[in-house]
Image (tube, rainbow, N blue to C red; front, side):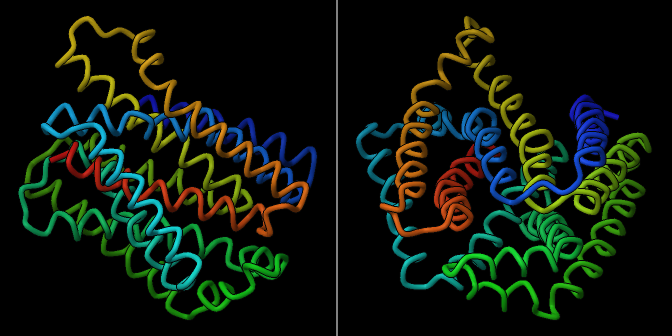
Length: 297
């Protein structure tokens, strides 16, 4: 068991105890807690995209930020005009990004590695939806601006994706470990992490369970990878300097989120907190995923 899995397991046990004692937590409190955790742990893992990209490519900072922000703006427009396409596209890029991050240590040489990454991510997201399908439908129908997404989450293909992707993924991991003669401990560690993800998605409401995965098994791992990489090209870097490096874009993002949150609460911005959370995560995921693909390559 690696340190991320151990920390994740401890948090899951603690939260399950709290959740059992307190009973059901309303969605508003779940979303607020998720936004806080995402703000202080999730956002920082993408706060140095500029540093990572510009460390490998010679490009004026103005051009980088123009391209980065243009990607966000275009995706925001897509959400306005093509919401169903946008949420499906969000699932696709998230699946690839999560899989690429999770399997980055495997150094696949196959030309099908992007398919393998996407398969891992599809397994993750279909598991999340499969165990929380009824809750997702209720959640979508609770807000007028998310009712249209109900058809996505009640589609029968969810079951096929869940069973198919999980069976194929586990089979692939076992075959690869056998052929490459990798340490059996690495296989058991990967399977144990998949078990933890299934357990979390089964035990907790969707907002809590996804936040747990995103923070402890994704963001913390990526932050560690980023620190190790930058430490190699900047030997003088230490943890304190790394945190300082994360601060500017993290603070800008937090200010942006706070302004929008207040606007939603006083009903100046006509959007539900749930939809705002989904759109916010999706529009920063797209450019971040592109940067991270370049980083891992």
